[in-house]
Length: 224
Image 1 (cartoon, rainbow, N blue to C red):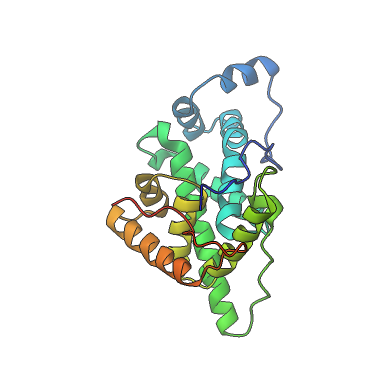
Image 2: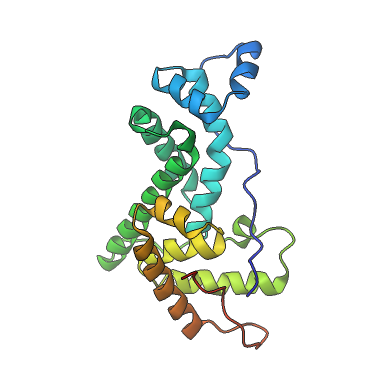
């Protein structure tokens, strides 16, 4: 299947964290700073710098979590918790220019924890029914009915996979990250990422049925 049209992350972020009123002049000056400088200021307790970082990267974090989950349910809470953890640990970030990727890894870890907790609760009979795939949240407005039907089936199949395989495949084949980026986001080696994606791809190839009846792979193969 060709690259799947997905919703972009340009949507305005919702619910920014509580911050003090920022003078327009200083807000404008901060908005022009690169992430590395904002991280440095934020690590020293500059609340306005933290606000700019939030507004700059919240949409990315929300969309990242939504595409992995396949539904926006509880995603904003996950993202807010991820930002809080990131802001509390800014001093631990060695490469301050890499804030976006580092935040992404915190979001991915939070989503993974939620998935694993949900599976445990389901095994104990304490979980709630899975939220239906929200195609409006993950597909671009230009996506055809055919592509939307494919996405719905793919996400339904992905939900039966182990969390690590599901996340790795989604980051690579739905979100379009390079393998090295997937390894960084999932905090594991490149070899481990390749194994996880390959296992997920094999499962999808065996179970995916194209709505049109055409014989075509679910996605491109993993780079070797």
